[in-house]
Amino acid sequence: MRSRLPLIALIVVLSATLVFVTAFWDPRPPATVMAVQNARLAAAKPAGGDFMLQGPQGPVALADYRGKVVLLYFGYTYCPDVCPTALALIAQALSGLEASEQPQVQALFISVDPQRDSADRLQEYAPYFHPKLIGLSGTQDEIASVAARYGARYEAQSPNERSAVAE
Image 1 (cartoon, rainbow, N blue to C red):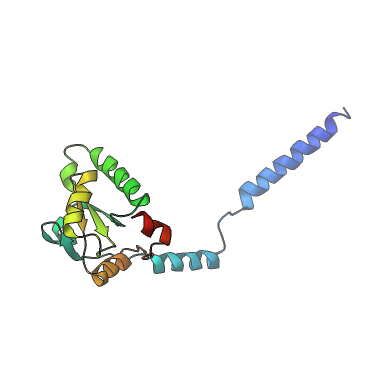
Image 2 (cartoon, helix red, strand yellow; image 1 turned 120 degrees about the vertical axis):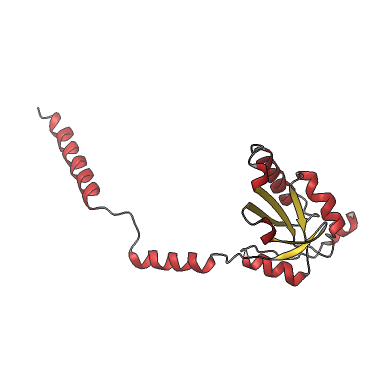
């Protein structure tokens, strides 16, 4: 009987702890912490909205695709790894759509490098990944405005000496 006493005591303590946790523990943060987190999320939420940029056949507005799901991707054609990988994933997602779903979706690739990404370059580059992907560009100010409204951040980097020699 004595050997069972520690085991019974352990079971009672564990049971009491479980009852206490179930009845009284609230894992949510205090209301003030939640209010601060909600305020940050609200402040960081992109405004979005219509825009007009240059496409391969002329001006393209977001409003042109009203009623469709529009996927926006910000990048540039000289990106060595991240952009092609992301565009390949977008192409895979677009290819995975049913034939009836294809007309309801449009993917737009917005270049943040208008100095190098001409309309001709974007017309060649974007469809390489998927025929429904349209490359867009504009002035630095137009692109910066669209990127800011959609919460995209980018920064031009000057090439280092090694990459300048390699080109």
